[in-house]
Image 1: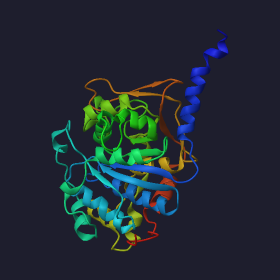
Image 2: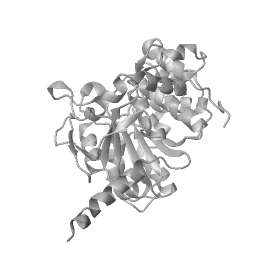
Image 3: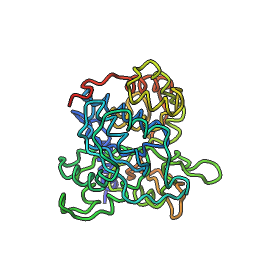
Image 4: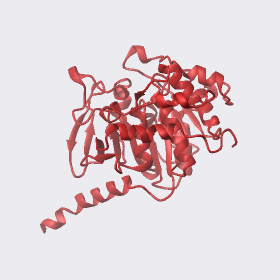
Amino acid sequence: MPRYLSLVPTLVACFLFISSITKAEGPVKVIFDTDIASDVDDVGSLAMLHALADRGEVEILACTISSNNPWSAACVDAINTWYGRPDIPIGRVEKFVAGLAKDQNPGSRYTEAIAKEFSHDLADNDSVPLAVDVYRQVLAEQPDDNVTIVSVGFLTNLAELLDSTADEHSPLTGKELIEKKVKLWVCMGGVFPKGQFGKGIGEYNLRVTPDATERAINHWPTPVVFTGYEIGKRVMTGAGLERADADNPIRRGYQRYNGLGDRNSWDQTAVLYAARGAGDYWTLSPPGTCHLPENSKGCHEWSESPEGEHRYLIEKMPPKEVATEIEALMMAEPKNMGTE
């Protein structure tokens, strides 16, 4: 066989990957999967999504929650309501099996306050449908190859989606439904390319629910772009919210969390990439595969390969400049505050 023919599979794989990460015309259709509770960058990320939606850059299809904090769902609903989108579907985690005992019932400095101080219509956490049901319904209703999943927390919901079976929403298995409907998964998680911190410690989002992490990343059937710990570590945002009105839930979240100081913007980088791509912000790594061995405790391995469907972000724009763009979106006034 001529040598150039042997390159065809590799070229096709590269073309498909590039197509999946190229910004499409029209708003990016996003399902936002968050562990909103323990850290406050989830609040900043949700604010960004609404600001980007007001600009026509994204459409928020659903919010799914991977934390089992009892106020997380109401907190999300209160923020969505404040931005004029009270009817965004919300799903809660079904099986939270933490590898770290202290994370079984994560506390929060802000979820209860936001839930109680800002308007929303969730009666209680038990009234929220399971995340896997929300995923299956929303995905089934979307055109093929159309949805970007942005995960900024634990991967429990994504593992449950992968393992799901046919139901009233779709005759497809979870994996088949993902293959058909999901264009890209943007995952805030990991440390690239080394895969761990010192002494074999994995990044937080990947190590808290290690079994779910291994199932989701090792078996996910579409392209994945990772925004690792190192990408958001030096992007500091939040202090500017001191200038926002007191009746702003994003300001309230940061006020409760750290007194309106700056905080690392790990989760916000995933949202910015999902909406706008690498652009001038970052460089994409060459394609490869992120793999978690058995009993990984959130530590992962990276192997570069032209056939790989994974990439990770590499710093390009100075972090302070990225922070300026992110914080401007976090502070943007809602276009339709509480009107929908």
